[in-house]
Length: 184
Image 1 (cartoon, helix red, strand yellow):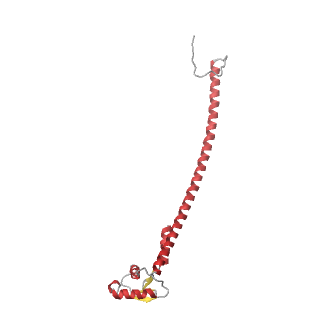
Image 2 (cartoon, rainbow, N blue to C red):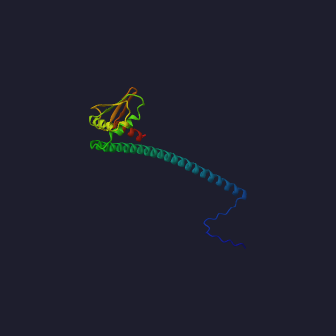
Image 3 (cartoon, helix red, strand yellow):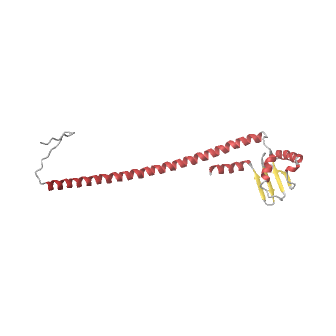
């Protein structure tokens, strides 16, 4: 007598009267059918997964595009705001006379070729300040430099002319240039 101990109860018993080859053949047919069904399910799942990946890629691309647009927009807004703050600070300093026109002229002169006859155009208010400063400090200015009053020039600005061209030290032009650099 053989005794078999099972861990689970038997749910179904089938008595087989057919020969063993037939049973094996039927088992192989059922296994082939199950494999074909599994392959079909796997193919469907793979197609579904590919669709999900394509959707995820499209969403990721849209998010990246939106992110770049937002960053660019914020960068431009920050640049404009920074320049506007600088403009207000400079306007306050100019209104209070808190600037040194001689330093502005010296900086602009750095862009002028040496040996040229130079004419520095200044606002009427800055002309008097500059004239006095350079009379008291004659070594701070090239000998070929002359001053001219130009009512179109604002305080804290100057325009230098020479035979090779014009050098402007105009606040709003410099701020616009800074804004362009900040948004690149």
